[in-house]
Amino acid sequence: MKSYQYKTAGVCCQEIYFELDEENKIRQVIFLGGCAGNLLAISKLVKGKPATEIADLLAGNDCGGKGTSCADQFAQALKQALLQQQN
Image (cartoon, rainbow, N blue to C red; front, side, top):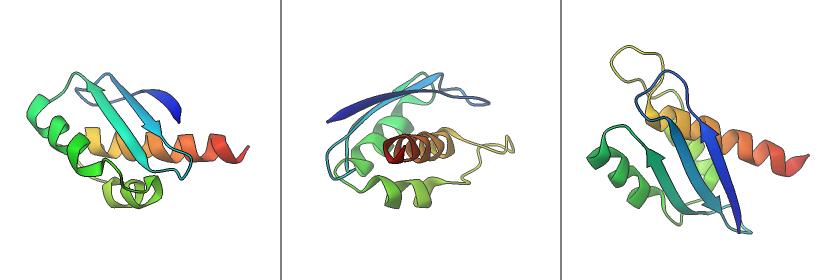
């Protein structure tokens, strides 16, 4: 199990903490700040899913014309974590 911390930009959530298992499935997600109900729901829905699948699904999601969202930031965090593992 590997843990990650991602500092967000342009959204209400300030940071995202998450864990990926050996198969790159999401085991835990914690959003610091943001819309608690929505982010708790996202955390529950993505648990156990492949990181690549979730990154593709959530990428580009926009919140109020900001050009990003907490979900999009999580997608970016997952992509970054997967790239780090390749290097």
